[in-house]
Length: 64
Image 1 (cartoon, rainbow, N blue to C red):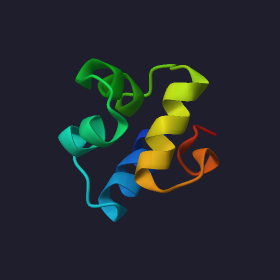
Image 2 (image 1 turned 120 degrees about the vertical axis):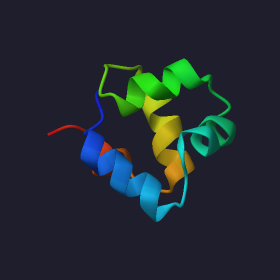
Image 3 (image 1 turned 180 degrees about the vertical axis):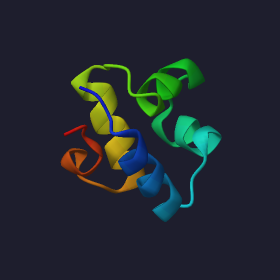
């Protein structure tokens, strides 16, 4: 699964989170979060944790 970078950044802005905040809330290492942010393919579970941390449905940040 790949995130749409702009949609993800908007969700982060709405949640008032930066990369460090997202790392802490998901309990995932920064390289993993960076993979999500840069649009690399990640496991569905990882993607789901990021969406949950941001308070959005996975479809809201999923690449079209």
